[in-house]
Image (cartoon, rainbow, N blue to C red; front, top):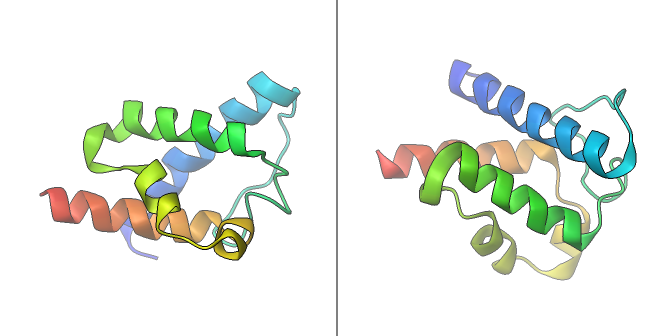
Length: 97
């Protein structure tokens, strides 16, 4: 994992930890590249909407999580991992500049 991926993983881990703590009172969740949003974190679609807002606050408009999800099949969303989101964010930031 390169330094940019490590930094993005740390950012996303912080955002997810905050979301899980605020919404569900969970503060001891282990998050890594293989963590799934559905199975491991048990996030619901409304949580993904909240995460999209948090990502936009953090990275600005160049990271469009809603658009990223819109391009996926339902099964892909169910199996979505933190690692796949990290890769998407890194690619979006590189493309933006």
